[in-house]
Length: 284
Image (tube, rainbow, N blue to C red; front, side, top):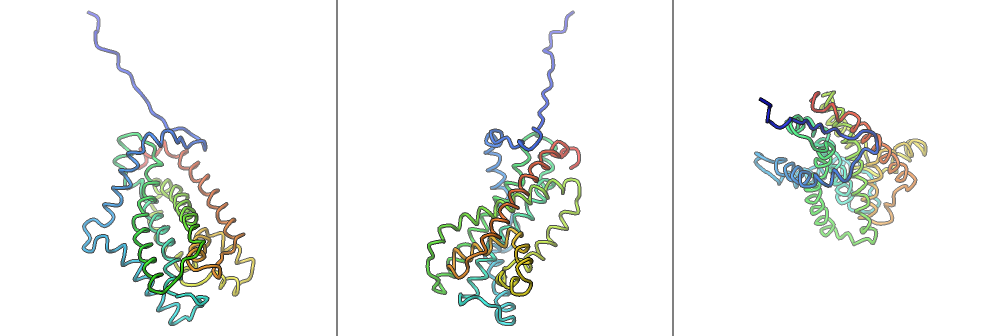
């Protein structure tokens, strides 16, 4: 008697390879999942904490207080006549966004191992959503900065309209590094220990509590240009320029060099991510 059961078919979904890699149409099809992951990351960030979302207020505020005491009161660092607290908060805001986004995105694939091992979707969504969720804390910090500007009488600067450009550079830098590190963390779990270590060091190496011109005064032009290859130097000084005016204009060749470096890291990071994506479900 012939078998009347329908023939079974197997459908295998494989990610595209190479740099062209990023299939934006596919990412758009999964936009609802992307939005869900962003919202999930925001909700669980302060889940089961006593102070909840208040941590987003306390962290930048208390860190600014510490920097004012250590760098201004004890170290007598120059602020070019601007309120030192505003100068520091303007630097701390993008730095904390970058550091938090890097920490969340680097561990995002491992934290989503159950999803990765069970269903197919563009894996690039995971680190991207982890970075984007950091904008919630960023907006709260921006409200604190706006209040400090009003308190200290800092006037509106026309270049404040260019602030979103430097926000985008900070986002791109965090995403570029996060894509690299999230893929590496699947195979080498040392990454989750290395990232917090370097972000803690970066807080003091980047010009958060001081002006980048201090590096020029101490070490000369060669070291100064290399220092600007750190993309967050350009972002931080760009924030200060937008908020505090022309006296804080950044070193534009250094800004251009850091933007080019971010673009190169992003391209290389996406290429590496897509090349190793097919192994995530097996290794994770």
